[in-house]
Length: 496
Ligand code: GAP
Image (cartoon, rainbow, N blue to C red; front, side):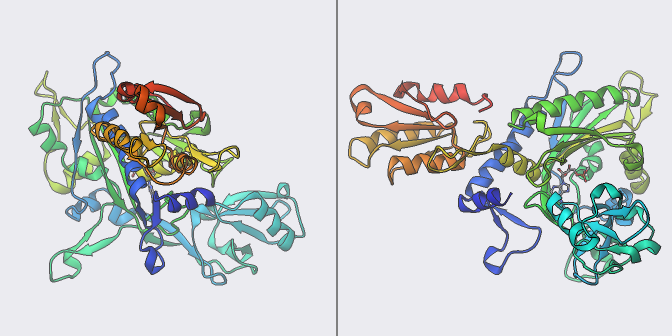
């Protein structure tokens, strides 16, 4: 992870927000290449949902329309959704280390024979840390001597036996406190509780609020979907793992409205579609885990949820969540109908006496988390090349599709390269890089994941061909200048 974070900063993918002021925990800025990468992933999701939605079981494209709703909505929206009352994480503080943890992220080892202290570990503790602490605090007792429990499942009366994740003494963890994760602000000049409003903690609410507007203004019929991409904000107790869990992030959410009886079929449909999409952006499905969330862990409104989990560098060999696909029933529409007093029922066009609130299947995915997964998957060590590393992005995802490199800054090479650049940039994000020796320029393109480099040299002047260098194999071939655009077009749907 450290190497990925360092490359992201060095090459302009992602910077800590407010870097020159020492940063601000849980916030990140996307640099020139990170913005391109994020936009590409965003556009591929939008295309797969709204522009070219998949074919449904009947062989026809399913109907999905897009939306871009406000970040701040009427605060009643969050009362209806349950966020004002319940968007809480149980949180414990450690009086010794002064650190704060989410209780459901702390694992506790309890000695099977009841003898000795209980040892707590934060979610990301590595095997080595665990063994080191067992050595120091439990005379090297093996892990097999312990049972494992989550801290939020342990009664507070037993906390006196627990040594906190960064503590040396037992009994320093405080009682879990609920902590509302919504950021808020005050609208207008007056401030005051009555003008309090919240920054949305998820994008889906705007979709439910506009369900009726979309029905009344477009020609969609159940089953159909509304898709939205945008910022979401959560005052996470412990933002961590680079952009994985941040306080400001982006989500890509689809709310798929269907008849209750058909919900299980559509649930399976969307799980399959989402697998295909992750594969298309270069995620190795062998490094994914599809967790059928156990009944006791499901949100109260959900009958079934599958979490798509990925083996992130910080979690490997374990997995962490990329996306959740939830059957939300008609909980949200019911709540908003009740709280707003506005009828949100859908009228069956074949039988106008039949009105109902459709069920919802929701594939909900973090865009910024997808950026981290794509970067992690692409990061490939290769000692044989000068950069020592390259980013193996699929061409469609890569921030730059190609670099055009005149071999030298000579009179005859540069104008040809400039002309090619001006032609290609109409359709593709391409780089024209004139300075430095060619090896250094290839190394830079490898590190930013540019799949192809077109080099203009003396032969170009005489026979109108350029060298194409393939990022992954470093193999070179010559193609005609007039074939370069076709060549790139043919590569855009390839995986690498
Ligand atoms: N509307 C449902 C919903 O928001 P969620 O599981 O809380 O469900 C969905 O969030 C996705 O949003 C997660 O799978 C993750 O990819 C992303 N996400 C959630 N919290 C995040 C955070 N603090 N930082 C980055 N991404 C986050």
